[in-house]
Image 1: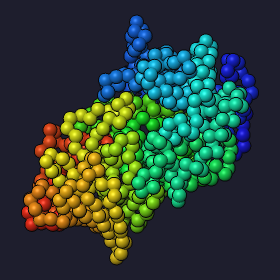
Image 2: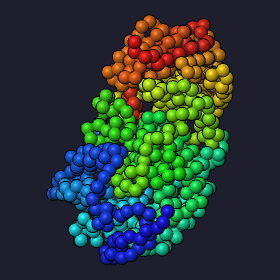
Image 3: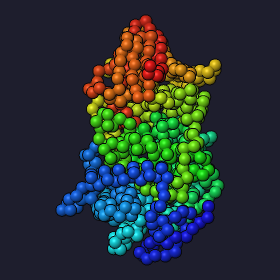
Image 4: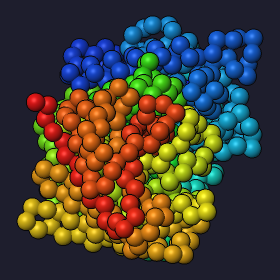
Length: 640
């Protein structure tokens, strides 16, 4: 890739010849001031960005007399203002530049004016209007403002452009002075690596660039073997679990950190690093579902998992777009992911999962102003975006068999139309209570005709990040399939067991998993009597069979809990006490057992869980007295 030199606004507000940026067109040049042709995918991206930016403008507060709120994007779901809403400056300026509509320019200027409420004297921005709140988000604001100025600063009034540029310089200095490899979770250090490199070029500051290179030297130390998964999403960022497993979160990795790492490597034209990151992107891509969803059922920060990614991150398009020429499946991933974001949009805003609309849950605006930045990124890189196709399938669309990821103790299984995830990952994020799928749980079950059938949720909905998690609407019901028992009001289940063991075989067309676990409470204490249990998962071309086996025959309330992902309005028919059907768009999900099945009574037609933003029918199969084994069979039937 040849470097091209472009002109841009320097720190002093003048135009100068700078250190080279990406080898791509800069929208500041006349040659790319208007787009003559767009591919079908680019049109889709532009249409989605238009929908999102227009919806954000509707929720922008217009109260010039109140400087504490004027210009902010109000979140009706969380009933507050998210401090990072200033990130919307980038998509707003893109739309202003490309459409000439003054409403977008006003939106950009108003949201930046409001950002003074979270602007600190040291150059940082805070996550909420409180000077003592978290300042690490400065790196994301700096990238958003920097890219907005670089690509679209030419449309701003001179005094505004100069003011924003000086503010950006203060943010760059804050990042330079404070961000190290130990700053916080790993996403901050490696996003700062890109920010410092980008801003070093923007301000012609070699000191920033040199610091970015110091951070980049660390990259190989934070990738696992053998799959090159990025770790560091916990505090401490490099502390192994009891099993020796490092803290990894798929959502943060693909939607935030890897973007910064790849963008840095592209700027530096570091071929060795680009090759390493290609392998890392391939390792992470194993977890993309065939519909573009990211399977973060097991990640350390699963508390922010949405079906399409992670709640406050930016989206996975930049990294996979920039390196799509190295692996064409990356292009497919970009398109699938973007299409899923489109179908997950509710009332103009990106909802945090598949079933917000059917359950009547308002979408948090944070998803939209974060992910809109990456749509602007795609449109600002037509030389990459217009080459993207879905001609090459992603791995999980075509895989057959089982792959074990030893660095997280997670297994991905594929047979026929079925995709499954089994997890005994024992990393816990910040708290002693497990939040993500573990205990040998069937963390995800997906079928090509009907999509997700099971998805894990947090064991309990803990507001680990009160400013960044949407309140749970109504009753909470854990979605992870499990064996459970209540003893004196205390919940014991395999999905709290950090010591469960998993084995599998793949013979005669059947993948068979055997999980040995113990019924454990949130304090990691096992129940005193008959704690041992076993789960078996068998997958063949036609069906999935789940067996739950206990070591006693007492009438002690033991039950197999099976929350079937299903949107409100899908017909549920109980054909007999042992047989339930759920009628979905793509087929009929048939559920049969050797014991009676009942559906838990709920406040609404379905339970809804913020993680990963889906509704479910809570099916319960209780162990009758004298029964040691429950056999539960799932099939997907065609409509006759």
